Length: 239
Image 1 (cartoon, rainbow, N blue to C red):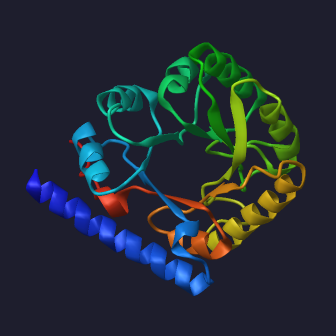
Image 2 (image 1 turned 90 degrees about the vertical axis):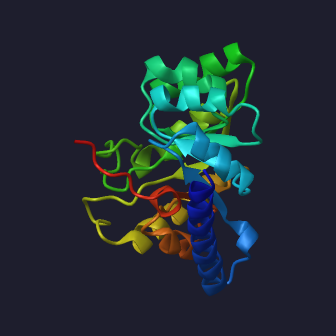
């Protein structure tokens, strides 16, 4: 376990340096950007090591993996983010452990999250996942609401019991006008965030950027970056 802790500590230090350098280049204080470590496919033992190393925000994208891991780490001072496409039949489980759901992209999901948050006696922070590969009123290939649908969905979240509208999230698109243009994509998300905050001033979170493109996200103004493989390593393929 010591070898794994040393490995994670070294990787974490490299990522922290990348974030610090990106903040310096953008003229932003380091504390402006929160690191979320995406622990999907990795065991609870790694989450425990990360907590020992000072990580406070972790993310998962599959409830069947996240629920038992969150339960096994319930004693740790962690904030859990759900970042994957969320089916309504998984909402009750997710509402039991997630502090933030970053993939809110349709009204049916808002209704289900509200119901289960109230049932659990919890308040869930919600980020609208924005699809920058979609038309103004379509859905993206990997989920997400089109830019033209943000206002209506935001109002729905803001008015829902048990939910709190905290901001926007995106994944750099693989198709469409922003494919291969991460900086432009994240700048577009920041413009949409500015628009959102005119009617919802408290929705200040902007979650963008992963292992390969976190510098672009920081430069654009993201408040949270979601980093997995750069911290935990690339898992060998099975088989």
